[in-house]
Length: 585
Image (tube, rainbow, N blue to C red; front, side, top):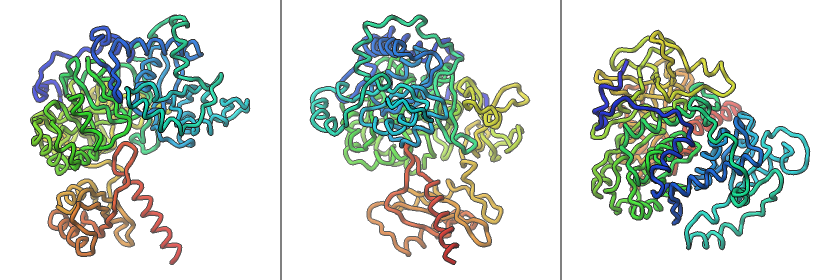
């Protein structure tokens, strides 16, 4: 088992034992706002909000929500991009004692209904442009004014607008452009105006018990595929989220007052909220909110705000490395750059770090590993250290080990098995699903409860961990395990390949075999000759069973909403093609 404390020096700091205050999410933010009232908390499209002003807006909104019927224990869907109201909603709900459950802002009506039903959400917060999707499902719950009973649990919906949150002239452009295309919202008793709530907040009484949550009570619900492969609602405590923020400062910081981060990752993702928002706000930092990622739009933000931190997924860094304007932008302000959410190929790391070096930045692109079941990151590569394909060392106060699948027996150095972690960020459990919780949270002989990841990896003799493969992505060819990520690494090293994805496809005698999907760099064409060249390239570096039998060239690979390659989409497409071919025969 890997003990983290002796290795804290790898992070460039050797702090004493970390202290986790007995506070809620709101309590942590309030304490920081009182320490640094004049520091900018948020920057959004030309408008700056100080920490004192943000705290005031949160307090006022919490009073307005309570006066409108919100109470401790209520659950609220938050369907917003990274805008000021999303941040305010998170902490205002915390102050009342309610639990936010953020979802992707582009969720379909059926997805919204599914999320809301899963967590029995009686409240929702969304954007005026998204309201039609809510209107469709609210009618099914009798919440839109028709009085008909239904299956939607949402009883009150708060609708906000980007208008008024941006600086001039952006606000004028929004009013004359996108705002004119948004249909009027039918405000009433069950559909409430965010602006109206803020306007009335001065006349409503203070909460009977401000900030009623203790550190160990539920604070946040995040949705994930979970280690079991099914959609789960992950229940996280205030302590979980606050511990992650403090560990991030110790392992990835220090975060100093006024340090800014480009908050690009969406808040419905643990990485986006816990690292991109909460860890920064409670350590005196500033969040530059980016509601939608476009590589070409980041360079002006970097020049204007000179951020200290950037967190993203591999495809984000790949896009930035290829963006001409970003490649010409001074980058010396960055001191912490973190990659998570998916495996970072050495090629993407080298390309992005070359851009950093050319533009005056000495920071590394540091890969991490984590799960939503532990809020987000629990393992991170130290600054100034790199071991190819390693995800690094456990966060301070986190322990990690590799066990033989299906057991609690620890593996030897470099022996592959299941990655397990334990520490103060481990979830309370899957909401209302004790059986699924028991499958991943297991008591070990050491007396600790360990989170079983279902991810395959190993640990070297120095305590550095290596992620090999999501267990459910393993391809079994004639009984031999093939790791798609290993094949993708080889493909990505070929100069023609920009990005690749490998899946298993049916085979009449070998059950399934690897097939590669590839997008090409400029100057290369999709030909049968290049397909053969790529397969031969793999044969020179991999055992025969691991080599793709076919390569298909695509203009773009499908992506998930958080920027990962959507291998399941390719898998489903191939399965459908195989079924259709079998039907025709």
